[in-house]
Image (tube, rainbow, N blue to C red; front, side, top):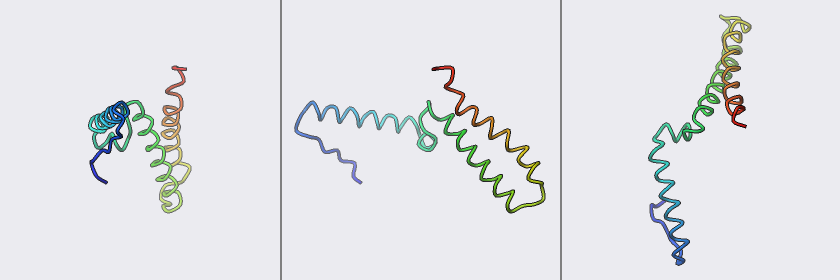
Length: 98
């Protein structure tokens, strides 16, 4: 993948392409490394909450199947509210804006 930008002969279209590429570059530069992983400012909260839900569910399922030192009922009594709170944040956050 090269850094060259091939532009069409139409000057107006070429100008729009340059402007679009510039905006894309600015967004990438502003986001940084973590921004590329978690997304833009407006979506980062939901993305982090979603990642937390996936991690907790995976850890809970793995621990339930592989480890028996803590009863599954007690484990899910801890993990369940955290998952529920995260899901409430993800899906309830925009409800007041509509």
